Amino acid sequence: MDLKLKDKLFIVCGATGGFGKSTALALTGEGAKVIAVARRPEKLEELKAASGENLEIVATDLTEPSSVKLIEKMIGGRVPDGVLINAGGPPALPFAETIIDDWDRAYRQVLRWKIELTAALLPMFRKNRYGRFLYIESASVRQPLENMILSTSFRLAVTGFVKALSLEAAESGITFNIIAPGYHHTSAMDRIISKMSRDKGISADEALKQVESRIPMKKLGDPDKLSSLALWLLSPSSEYVTGQVFTIDGGLVKNTL
Image (cartoon, rainbow, N blue to C red; front, side):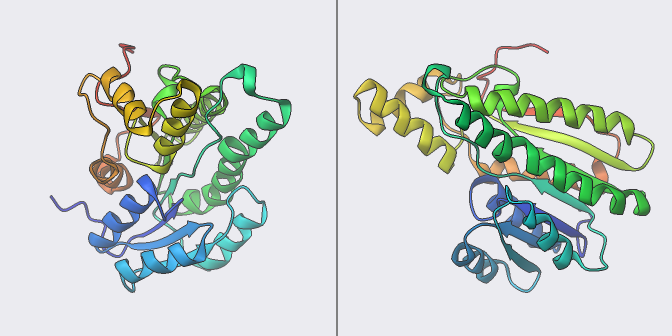
């Protein structure tokens, strides 16, 4: 299926790992041009070597206000066709182990920078009467997950923000959607397993087996498979889909809504 992505320009945040890396590679594989954003220059250079000339890199911490200016500078006079808004989240903690500073940091990690980047890109998309905003959040917006209170609280705020924006921009040719992954083979999953291993005094392998036992499919997800949905949602083919949350979780979430 031709998704008509060739020569289109996309920004991919959190591009050197997990869902971001998988999506960046999938986009360049379809002939799209990608501005890859992440913190570590060496990892970005590795990604560029694997992607070829269709990938440009921006090394910055997305939680810092200066990151938006760097991205705008890289865009120059071009208008992106879409953006994958994605980055790592706060530590896995129950409420009793958090302090107020954890909440302040989680706000900056999960919510604030996404609003700032969206605000910077939206006028460009409006001028073009076209654009795809796609946010990678978590299945916890559908059903709370163990030790994820910081992530869940602010990702729910992102979900409300995205839904409200989708209504405001519904006639403009711009779509806003969310992919909400469950447990996948990512660095975020590694942090959850480490926390579980320490708390329960068990090995990492045993902790992983316990997590997999809760999933109806009895296995973790593959970020490369999830990227196929991301590509469709970033493509012109998804023009009639907006304000939606797509939960990819192996059946973990029991909510029927």
